Length: 252
Image (cartoon, rainbow, N blue to C red; front, side, top):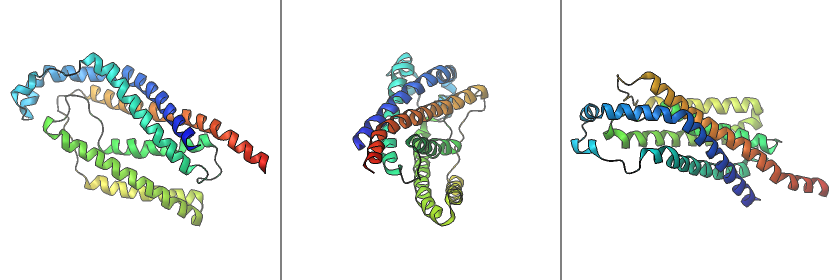
């Protein structure tokens, strides 16, 4: 059964990745193209302000832009979706039956909703995504470390909140346990967000509309990915577990 769930989780991730690619290509790529045009038109001044070497300004792209926005984007999103789908199936195998007498599709949606908030939404609120031409080249490494560090903290806090939430539910009831666990997560993540440095490298002349379009498209792409993943995997898991449930009923 574990192998069946893993395969179906990866298949659901594949479907979700294709749908997310469609959203990203339709709504995200226009703002990326606009940002790249701004970067190229004002790249000389911006690079010198950031302390970049003049020789780096004229480097040719290793991968053409048309490949980046199509095959490259599709490959990246699909691989990400398949990987997340596999991890979701493992989490589902552990959680099913431990969150109460819930249908598999409900458990799958709860897991994907929680994972979306912990892995993407909360870190995005602290360190939102930026299009090209935003951010100094010399700080790429530090900004990446801060973002993934915050993701790791959010994920760990979410796992601990889930573990303690079950214990609190046994003592104070399911709803009160959930509220206490959620409050604990928010307190921890709020303190960590306050302690971690603020990163704001958006140039004053960068168009606010382009930045807004890129960030809303980023959120929309993630919503499409996680929602499609939860719905597809929930349906697959329910079909996979139905024979097992029927056999258990017949045996009883």
